[in-house]
Length: 279
Image (cartoon, rainbow, N blue to C red):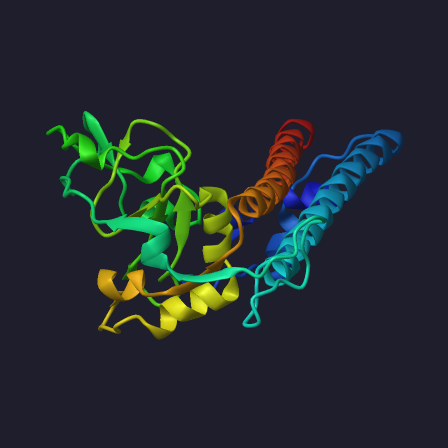
């Protein structure tokens, strides 16, 4: 019965003028079609199995996200210069540096905020709101920006002008042919810095807390001065250990994303079955 109820368009019977509501008499009058009992059982079993598989993937994704959260705390050096968990073969103390010594930091170019499409694509604040580079939320310009603004794969975009809840958010550039727009800073790695490592490092709680504590508050948004940001302390191991850590978290992120894609597909399939099997 439950899948049948989910497929009813309840809004169609809404009697309210404010908070949605249905009277008992109206519910009684809603007409629904029922197959024979044995078909009802088969349909019910199908949706029960789909729901169980969805729940399984949701639990697995949650477990992986929890694991990542713990490892982000354990695999990066604390105040004593050593991480609590590290790969075999690494034992040296991490080097304390300033962010400006690890990356070059630059501002972007202005686009046309009125354009919904254009010849050249630009990043903007919304482009990294989910912590990844979302190409569906880019800005545009029809005037070709200087070549120096063309983003490289592996660059990191940093939200330095935003609400406090989003300040310090980062995204790794994984798509070619996009230019660096304003209101996001661009980090370009120096020779001894791995971009995947630094991306994960910037996603740790201490780095996010630093961003919030050093932001200049305003009425609707806060900002971090580029000079101040370049002074942010950051501890780094050897490039070999950075690459090992970065590669590990990259694979973990891919696994989490795989479960999310499976979840999205299963939910779409369930929705399709509901529409086609329970008319």
